[in-house]
Image (cartoon, rainbow, N blue to C red; front, side):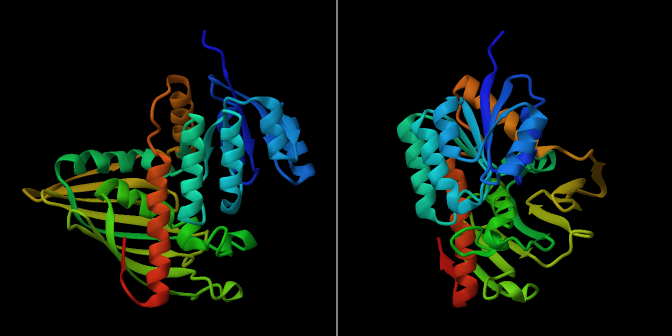
Length: 327
């Protein structure tokens, strides 16, 4: 039997989702957690039988982990990734990859130089309805798309800071932007309108926007995203038009479960389905560990995620300048 991978988690906000997955996966041994708030990390470590650290660098140096999840605010992703790579630890980093393209490049360089895998938590790529849409698009390319992806309120200071979370158009909307790039290809032109519409306490950060993408193959997408909803009724809707069909899927926020596909040559007999809620955290972490074990290229590379960060920043640039942005 193959020995278990020694894993750790840095950051215990969304990091708790990673802990939940590592503690049940048979090929992982969760040995260490790091968070600067001592009471938080001690309590979580007791619950899962791991060692607690308030210093992530000390954890990485002492534990000699095979893999680590970096779940800290984005401004610290570069430093944490460099520290992990320096001791030969493979990295799964939460989205957004970083607050700037330069930081993304630094993360890619650190992991490439150290010969360790770097993957980013763009978990929508692992969702079964996105996988279905991708399978359709392989033979029937998506020409036109409309997406609505609006979240509820977040009041964490780091979330709104330009050099950290970057507000909802980077920290959260990156999920939809990455998904569209995955389904439709590389973006060449961005045009956006946006502003501080709902969260005046965090002005002038943009909290909501409407924007369009033109892709390399000539296809286009329109997106409405940002902090324009409330958690109690937030949801998401996607419409994808191909040469031979139209795809629709929707559901609660971060939980699309309803699928519809209509064929242009048989318009009165659509394909409809409702799936069970999917654990995309589990899917991406299983994949990450499999890549570490088999030394295979991750499904979401640093280069992939860098492109999505660049697109999010282009949306914000266009909204502020009132001009289209060429990628």
